[in-house]
Image 1 (cartoon, rainbow, N blue to C red):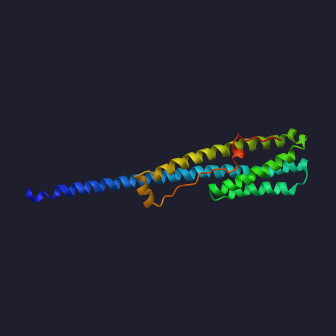
Image 2 (tube, helix red, strand yellow; image 1 turned 90 degrees about the vertical axis):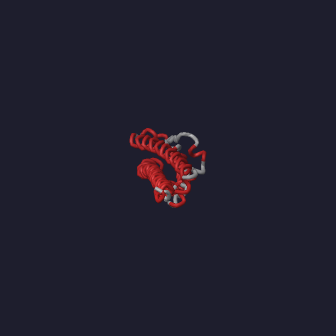
Length: 191
């Protein structure tokens, strides 16, 4: 029995090491899941930006039919929309979104001089699709930001921060549009 006295401390140390290893791998798996959720939320935003981008040529065609050739206004709108879709992350998307909102305001200003445009069925459909898509973009942005806040909290809390540091997990950027006036109210498309 005296020969086994060393076994109890070894067992205790082994149990502690195993418990720490299990905790480490479980925490790492939770962080990987959280990372995947953030990525999925961003993909939702990107999908809605692409959907809106797909509507822009139809909007330009409908407006061009009545408002005539305002190439600079149309080109700016199409370029800003394409930049939003091509953005590599929330910071790029926010800058492109600000540009897009400005270009869309220019188109609204142009359309306001053509009341007959607002009676066209195809234009009304494009308008409804654009409003619906803008609502979906805002909802996807709110969901993404909420997911990112949770993720950032999770990786910054001790002891999760130890695992996050060893896994090279970094805080993610919030998708904030710097032109708060552009998003402070629900999107309104008025033609």
